[in-house]
Length: 296
Image 1 (cartoon, one colour):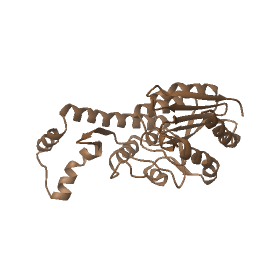
Image 2 (cartoon, one colour):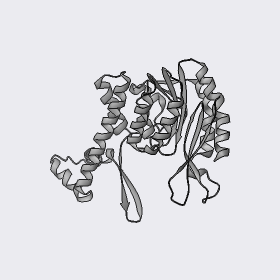
Image 3 (cartoon, one colour):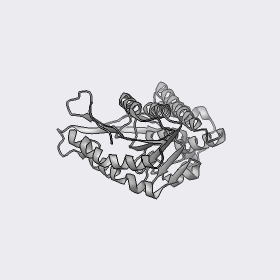
Image 4 (tube, helix red, strand yellow):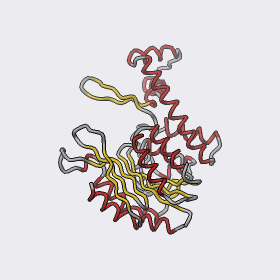
């Protein structure tokens, strides 16, 4: 754990220093997480309290997704400590990471950036296998019937009856509430930036929720820009932060362990005076934080 933090600090310190030198009114924070969770908030709050007051906060975000409410609370907490929030997303910024990025004044992306849909999923079991059903799977049921089978479901109650035969009605209602929740969070974060009218907000949200053919479809930064989001491909910035991406690719997450019995780091937060890494193990105990402090 200590070696992980020490090596990360060696990589991160010159990058943070370079980014902060661009303007005295900027501060930099790094958030990398296999899964965004509410439990990250207290440690994130500790980092933000140690940062110097800044008009602009640049956050390098590296994540494959997580809890949508955690993404919302992280975004709102970041906004409490700055006037302008920029998200730097050089590689993985998927699912809830994409949702979090909607609250940014500017999203800096690279040619390898991966964003995805923000549609909620219903998880369950089918026989011996786990299954996940997307909100788009249900919403597009009628389209599928017409396109594949030339079947016009004119009686909407018919379609509802068919769905309720396979999905428990209260579960379907709960799924519907999840869709409304994601829409509301996305609208809240887009409104926070003050850059989009209501029509543009609705177009962005509907596209990110229902217009891609799978949740894992790799959306590019250019596609987000064409959708109307404030995205910029900054080649010098990408070159500056890339060593951090390489480090997280090789060290973050349980899949990078050399032994299944080893503990693994699932989350990291780095600022100019502190490095925090969150570690899990196979014993099922609560994750623990390993913290290094020290000024640049």
